[in-house]
Length: 230
Length: 141
Image (cartoon, one colour):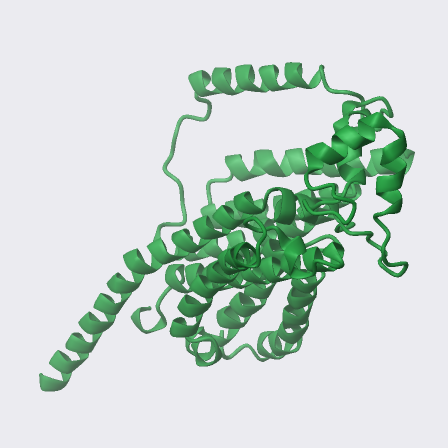
């Protein structure tokens, strides 16, 4: 436990230093590189918290792809920011107030690892225990029916016993990965529309930029032709 | 970067492993950590690395724009298609259990896997497309 805490403290301190460096560096190329490093540090912090999913995403998107995309954008724009006053007092005040409110909000949260926290006692536990889907061999069709059975007590055991129709079925009717079962089953609609949003973003970019690029190709072609003619 | 021998060789060695790892993350998504989004991004990172070092023409040779456009739409279509298929088979939208009524857990695993493939394909191709659009066209440099 102590090692985890120590690692977290070191990593978070480094992350804070990097964050300050990102906003204080004038050269945008350096800022991009520092932001990539910051993402890499954050990935290590997520890993340290056992949030492997988030660590994956942070390392691949934050440190990898977004750095490449920022570099691509930088090649189209300049590499240096405009000179601005060092401290914008209004913005600092706003950030301070927002940060203060957020820290005040965390005071209501349970201590990390507290066994009496709602996540370990409330209906989340029942939801983790139940089947992800909606159809069950015992005539339990919906999660809320299952929950009501769980509340009644004795039938709950029967329902759970009925959940192992196959001895080699190690995940007993639902995905053992909570994140995936939530994203793909409970919230399948959400994930579908998120995918649609990504698709729409890509297509919007294609419509906006590819046409311009093709136009540029034509321009280049015309220029070459003109040069040949000349 | 075509004259950088070390970069080119290392990239060529590295990219297959990145692609296989991305596939693994997608295919294993319903059992372990990861899933369509993460796997798709790792796949895209492999393609983008290749494109960065070997140039966009080489990337387009085995991942042409027509293919990325088609796959980006196909991934979303696969996801929605799974939902429609479950409806046609008598369940609700994205009610994967109808794929295998005698053993709903397997049906769910199958449905989730197909859905993860859909997400992975779309995310990967859209990321490659964004890189393709934002990076500098080489003949204009």
